[in-house]
Length: 165
Image 1 (cartoon, rainbow, N blue to C red):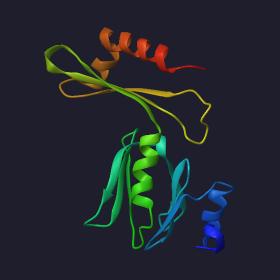
Image 2 (image 1 turned 90 degrees about the vertical axis):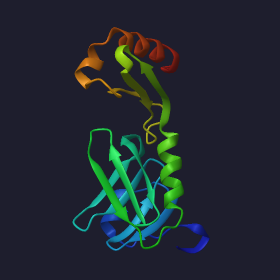
Image 3 (image 1 turned 180 degrees about the vertical axis):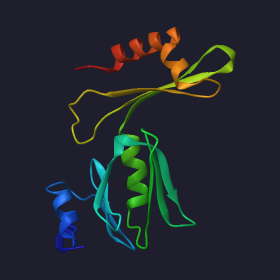
């Protein structure tokens, strides 16, 4: 940590990836610095520097026992980073993922099945349109969810309510 609370970034590739973005929290993994930015988590995976945008994290969190941040992305991928120094990263991870969520609705369908509609905001571009996603809950497949008229009606209603731009 540098003077006046500015975080110095010791990896040139990570510094280039971060650019002018503000570092909100920093920690360290065995592979280098891990940085919490307003719009993403940035880190080195040992081969390259990577970032995961907060709105792309479907779910995840801090595992205290293994000292690891773990996540699953909305496209079904997963990732993790072990932290030897945590800083405020576990708290920031939760706060930023939560900040990207504009709406979550679970819809009860026939035969005790459910569907989930989510709207996320890209924290890098706060004025951009919400990113809507419909996923299957229990008792139904994704293909069936996309064809369900109740889900379609609720998605239209929610978009009318939340899409203000």
